[in-house]
Amino acid sequence: MSMARVLIVDDDVELCRLLVERLSTEDFSIEAIHNGQNGLERIRSEDYALVILDLMLPGMKGLDVLRHVRERSAVPVLILTARGEDVDRILGLELGADDYLPKPFNPRELIARIRAILRRTNSLKHPSASLVVDYSSRSLDQ
Image (cartoon, rainbow, N blue to C red; front, side):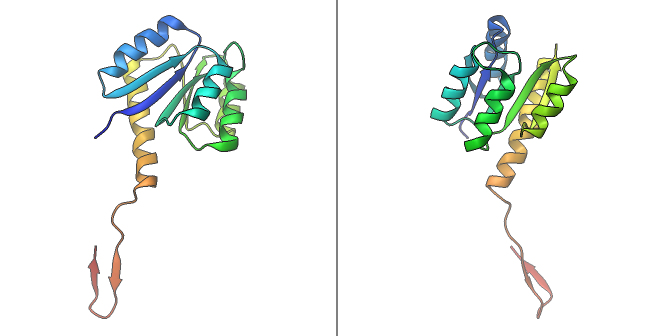
């Protein structure tokens, strides 16, 4: 199984360094971008399994990045927010984010949320075997 490519768009360079270090041990291939506009360009030009998006970014705010991403892509997006940003969190979900995590956060929770999102999106891409119902013999065939 190939490593899932994850892009982190967050201007906190130290946080990104720690996440790259931590997530790399969990079979994720991680890249970090520290500016909203550059993050959007990278999302549009590369193929990622998931994007971790901070809302407070230089260059372009996270919600604007998300709005532009959703115009063209269904890539899963997990937003990171400071605790007090309830309105932004709600707006992020309404704009199409798949999940959110308030800062500060436990890296294990982030990993669990990433895995949950990837499970959901992979099951949509690769539905399990279809069932065929044979009414005459009253049996199920896979």
